[in-house]
Image (cartoon, rainbow, N blue to C red):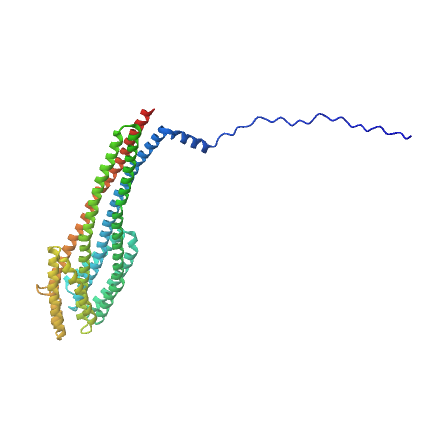
Length: 447
């Protein structure tokens, strides 16, 4: 019988494996944002929190009113200041054009005499060029944006005066080439100097218009600030009256009264300022533009009259130019003549001058060229130069009056605005302080 093997013995199992003991849990600190939001919730929780929020709203309302009112008044003051500066620049540009064409008119009239021109005509030409050059420098220094165009015009004036001196030299010697130089000079002035000045004048007019638009829009800032402040202050007072069972909160009532009174007063001042500025634009500003244009066209027509005679039967283009220019002057003066004595005197003087011009053209048309020239250069009472001189004096006086009125009116429309701007800003801060004190009093009472 076979022997059986003893059963295999297994090693005793060891004790069960035990996991490592877990360490203590680490507490993570809350994020800064959580801390902040928690503090904010706590600060504005419940009735005390709502009172704090109401206090912030009223303080902000007062500050918003002060800031918006300050911006409104200062914006209008700045816009009117820009309008005044640009209007003055426009007068300078128109003065340059006027002085150049007046100098050219004196020059062409002097050439009709032949030989050495009359001293008075020469002096008038030099005075016109000197005044134009000085005004060019003033206008360039006043506005750097205009300086580039004015520098180009100044270069043209330099070339123009050079051609004039060549024309004078040939004219003294009796050479026909003098007339050719003269025509070249006047053509240069009308093609390279006057058009850029006209375009610059249009650009400056646009700047004046933009300044007026900015001035008109400034009221919106005041209205917005006033409405926001009043709504906030009144809403908080109504809420407080219902919550605290007290009808009035004197500091809040005072803050509301300050905002309302200062807002109404400032609105009245701004309305007066805008009305004065608008009447100035419709009156003195447009009168200044019209008179300056009339003077430029009148001097240009006087030059065309002389150039027609210098051309000796070949000046139909100059004669047609005179008709167009004088018609424009007449239309402007017919309208301006209703505005004052100086404008009316200028209108009557120009009518008297055009009457003499018709006689000049009649004499030249009949072949009496010498008599036509004598009448065109006559400085006696009934001569063309004397009649035109009367127009020059009357229209110049009217222009000085209207441009002076323009500067004065725009300055007076602007002057109270800056003071009221600061008053409104201080009033807004005072209203904010008063409103804050009013709400804080209710908060202390609640506690």
